Image (cartoon, rainbow, N blue to C red; front, side):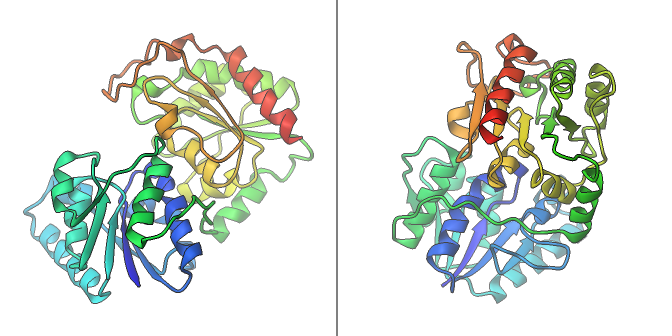
Length: 341
């Protein structure tokens, strides 16, 4: 069986799809699996030496670039190349785990006899591009992805902790960052978020970092290319006790493998920690942790009972999010650290 997985992005969504695909791989190790993904997220599937622990190959889909310039000659040429590459693999089955029109259209390029997706996808119009539609019962996105893959495979499946690629340069870098850590617990803060309403204030992350440092922890803050300003605010608010090394996605994977705890909002690094089996403290506001919160690991979720699910991309933090105090986060962190130690 030759199977194509459609989950182009973003980081957290790809990580939510991994346990379902890992379940397929475990149930059918001889199946040939391909994955269509945006180039920036390829390190979640493929290492620097080309090794892929979960799939046999990846297909790079520049969907966002193409949407900005759909009629450009280069765009049409790249789409044509993608179509030829997909069709050359002669996939028997395409499973769309994104539920978006763009992913479904890209999946259609493969020409697979079977195209399977959710009956109620994220973008309603996408369902008309699926030849087979699956009614899911699970609340969490991981559960829903497993249900879709199980229906496509025609057998029960359960989520499986996935293997992520090993980037050797990043592993050496992470070893260097933690060279002098000794026996101190290592805690990673990730203050960024997809939009402002999900973002707990940087000064509060700094206060958490200061308290954990005083308790003997080594505290690091994720400072990806788009988060350096936020990371710098956390460092200042901590009084300079938190470290903010320069991260890439590969380095974030490598370092997360080595930490004792991750503290973050509803964002990719929190879901990465879960994929790597790490305890997490989730700070939630306008998104529903039942649907896209921590899964399969020890965790504590902090969320105000009056916070409502709202994916409107407001710039300011949601009101309920602002009721969560640094002291509550430190208390939750200590509960997990004590259980781990």
